[in-house]
Length: 266
Length: 305
Image 1 (spheres, rainbow over the protein chains, first blue to last red):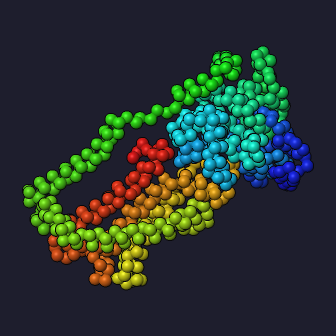
Image 2 (image 1 turned 30 degrees about the horizontal axis):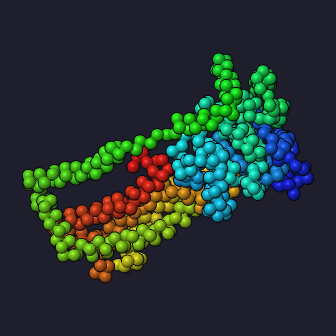
Image 3 (image 1 turned 90 degrees about the vertical axis):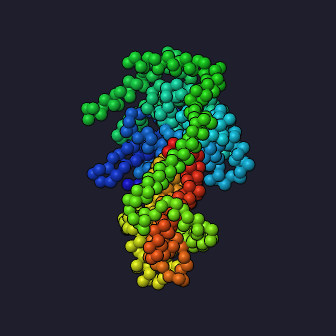
């Protein structure tokens, strides 16, 4: 097995100006007879500022893709190239540090990066304002609702990128960030995410198993097959609404069902 | 699927009003969803009353039973003295100032012993929690030591070090170190795995992860270990003082208890037990309880305390 991992621009010539480039990425868990191929030859390019939704049924390795891009795991084969050394990452759980205030949580990545206190205070306040939580900086996570916690997590993720000269975020990775929320909160937060994305302009890779969410949020929807995960099809869903949007949703659902059904036969 | 259809309408309505009303929607939702903390003054007063009055009531009841057993002459006087006699004994050592020597001798030993135990047990606990080989090798040993009564070490310590402070501190350390180390291990084991992952994506290196994520996340378990470690220090110290008595060692509470036994003075023995109990509970209430409460309350875990 060859393993070539390139995590920055200088090490790879495949990444010209795309925010993320995956070429032939393979991931195998375990060894020998018990080995499970999670991903097999995933190719994906995300342009700067583009909002891409990765969609798939359970076990399609969409979370694995995200972990590989985030650098939490290493691919078994293939290349991953990013323009940033540290993307902003958000998980399904807010996973805020319970001993820190909301503001302390947003400041944490800045503290780790050695930013001085007044500067990080200012940046944290700015980011909390961006997610409309300017007034709750002093509150602890347990004093906030699930939706508010997830927005603090978003602010914290945005604070963690280091390639930002002027506080610009180049890549945001999200792993089913709204799937643990109730439907009303999810709906409002989807709108909030779009607003924040338009305001800050990062490339977004958004993992979800919710077709409707993917079509509403993304400019492009990428469907992954399951075991092993491969890119099955892509849809350009930029600016769709009404009848067209409903038609694409039906189309994606139909393809998704085909993918799932193929496992019943096998 | 009917659920599907209702979904469509929610999303569509929401996206049409998106720009106009999202401000108000977000604000309204935040207000509705924010957990309401029950922080009425009446509630706090009631809780305070309960936490103070209930134990006082229990003590009064115990003394009343004791007094009636004594009045009924259930046991002879040299086995069960009157509560008042024991109180007089305590007053006597307090008035003569002897009590301060007793307390100082024992408490400063316990505090020094506990401090050394802390310094030894913390790195030990970190190693046990983070290095699988260390845990496999000495983990069971440490857990076993925790259940070994530390009084069992007194004869060995006396043979090793003679009747010296070193012997006493050895017993205290063997009692307290396993508790503190195990507390830290439990604290680290119970950290949700997502937190170290978050630390990694936020850019923490190993040292920063330990300082900013592992240690604060493990703090509640560590504190519980410290509390238990203090109890074990105090217990072990009393065992050591009671057995390893010598004029060079000075008179601590254990020695006082032993003197009472030798004089067949039951009220002195009970006064000694009372003082030992008071110190143990006093430190717990004055130091560990507030510390634990502050830590748990900051994390929204204060339901139990």
